[in-house]
Image 1: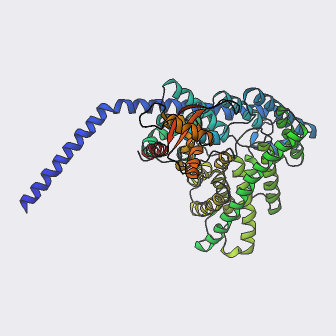
Image 2: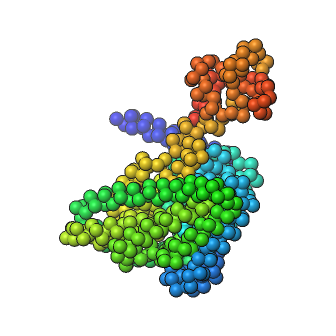
Image 3: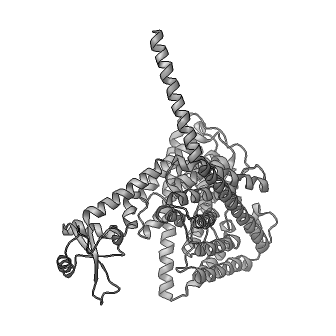
Length: 562
């Protein structure tokens, strides 16, 4: 017995010594570079935090100047006292300026937002468009300041992406490092914008990077903390919504009501997203039919918003005043329904009119109104077993936002951090889970991924769907003269039969040809136009295409599990 114990202790000591040697070797060879990377993440977090803070404070200053409101927390009440022509004119002028900026500095007249950051993380080695991104930030700034009905999280996320892209290009970062820096910037921007460090970090991982790799966690948390500190230096350690406690859940008998609320919120979220996409298609159709110049489209949207705001001033801007009224239970059932519908219409007009901004803050407002309306009905039907109707407003706020963003984890946490109330967790989690599960089946998982799907970017299905679109036939082919390649005569015959791919084509285009033609290889050609004879460059073998695809999948899996 004593011998076996000594043997066990000796073996344990040797294992500990080996572990210490390995740790020292890692610290000597990898430690300095890792620490240096954390300092870069901290610097990016500070820069992105200040950018988000400046964006928020700039909106407040310009909005106060344009509308003459002293306290922007009561902007909607103040706008209701203005002459109708000012309410109509301010968004129209804002839309006109936005249209001119986007027409001049973007090739498609479209504002860059969260979807473009997700695309940059997946397909662009963590880089986003910089020139278009700066123009989009200015356009969104003017939209939110001058009557647009969107949120500020989309612009600040893309602004953060521009900052990280600049740094990545300067240090020649590879794809993994570029994506990690992008995640750091996004986490800091969201944290600084909403004073929500936990949700900011998880938003970057869940929505932008779309994985929870350990190597990315520490720098992203560092950046999120830096962004939060910057926010609190300016605004103090206060929550976005200062409210009374909404009340406790009345035991477990009330949980089925929150399950139903979750499904209702999922349907509402889908309707919001569909309305935005329909408005964009309809706006494009009208623009083409009337032959309107591209720069005039946001001005028309601004005029429509101004006309709507004459009767419903709550649609202007982010909508915090109305959200607070909903969460405090001040609004009645009819008011909550009307305000939710008009805000949804205003959001669709703003986004369909290509004005700029994000969808997170509007979805919080619409969710709070939806939850409040549901709460009035639920507590009216079963008053003896129900909590307060405001508890449903809190749960609805998280449920609609989570379904729109496709981010149940970070949205649940951001509701807690925005309100400072952690006692409503069970109700929020139940509603969020049902709404997200339902909405993700009716769209491509989220608003952002559906946007990308509409551009033929299949990111919603995961790397196995979009990696083929990243690999070019010219990069995987065997050039002519390769001893393992086919002869020129065979390739010429296949070209005459129409069996070939261009060097610029992706494997996504080549793989269906292999399946359809059942051939071992395809000639790779360069062809400037249809009237020019194709020039043979080499051959793409089916096995080489599969090997390239497998290597890309392995690299992605290694990154996500490192």
